[in-house]
Image (cartoon, rainbow, N blue to C red; front, side, top):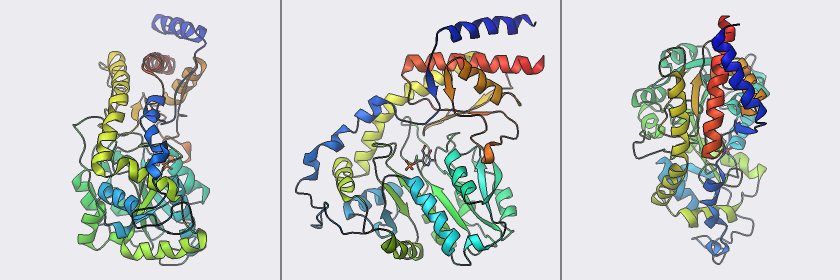
Length: 410
Ligand code: PLP
């Protein structure tokens, strides 16, 4: 047996003997990050339980969110308050629900469910739960490769000539998993899309728009500012949430859309609910106050997680800076590092890691149908483990990737 491989197996077995249980799989905040938001749970924030316009937040009423909460997100997304609706605890629910509504009632044409063979464009690598929603509704997904500025816009322009292509689902800032922020050129190209389908929609998931890792941040572009100039604002369904600002699963989520879309969405909301959780809305608005409050809070998150990103990057550099077959991203924000191992090695790397007690997001998860055509992409989520665990887990990942490569080349 190849002696290099042999000594790697020895190292691997030593890791295995440690009976580790490390997890770099899901993009969850660590405990210290959650503690940053404990102030939201202070009952005093709720004062006399009234929102600024006197609405009693403990009772029914107000369909689209209390105004201080809309104002907070209006500042974050640079969209007028009238174009914002505050929903419940998860933006994924908004996206699922929006697509479900398009399937049943359509988006300005026949219901999607009654149109044969509809398709969505999916920038890859991307977010597994986006793909899960589309797959769940039987919408065919088409991979659109990402480059350093965003998705391949020429390819998108080509695909949308087909009126079966009903939309695209994307993360324009600090994308999951590669941390890429769309350039102004890409934003302009999105704003000037001319799809054949008259019921085409862009799900614009701005999950990470305030999640900078340092002062050297990417620029936020408000898609509506560009789309308004091109008359395409109705195409965009923007969503965001405080999941990774306050508490995942216990924060607030929002949708920002054009005047026409807001009317349509509110109309069906009146059937769906009497209103979302205004108690949580009030305490979030009272705690963060405004965009400056959010920015100051996100700096505290960055102080917690930047060292974690650095440790992963340092370790990847230590092992692979001399090799062209390994590539990884060095994002300025968001929650993930995207790591490309040599073609055909991702599944084996993840499998070896599992054997050694390190859980990673499944290989293939960053592609529709779990099919990474090159079997090379691995998503690293550095935020949850503590620093020591993360360093060890990344060392193990690197050793496993080296083993997978050598095994393949044997
Ligand atoms: N969108 C993206 C791109 C994400 O990465 C995540 C979580 O990882 C979510 C949405 C989930 O957001 P929420 O908790 O608001 O459903």
